[in-house]
Length: 124
Image (tube, rainbow, N blue to C red; front, side, top):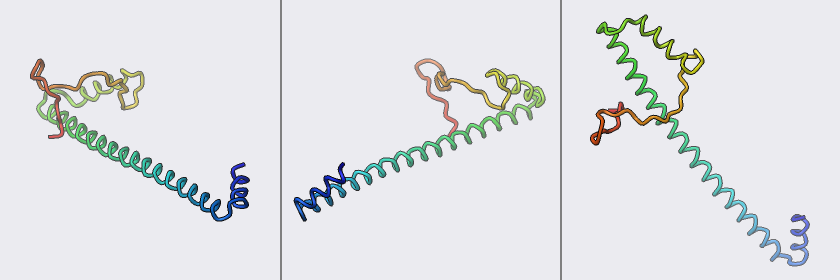
């Protein structure tokens, strides 16, 4: 239907009709360009969040690995006993798959309790 009207504009309005079509097309292209810019910003934000989460994951991995090795080296815990305990905890979510699914509704761990509490940061 719109294509028919476009031809009708050309027949009745000549160059003016064609100019109107060109302006409409320019507006559509500008709208698409703005949409593409917005979508690319979302992609950039998602990539930044992925990088941040990857870095946080690596920090946590380092902290857990260091703590585990230190406790085993000091004789605080036996490596086999720790492995068995990890397997036991792994089953808490109903699957022994090497992950522990949970809903993150707990507050961040803190260094102290009370009014002086501040979040525990591993990225220092």
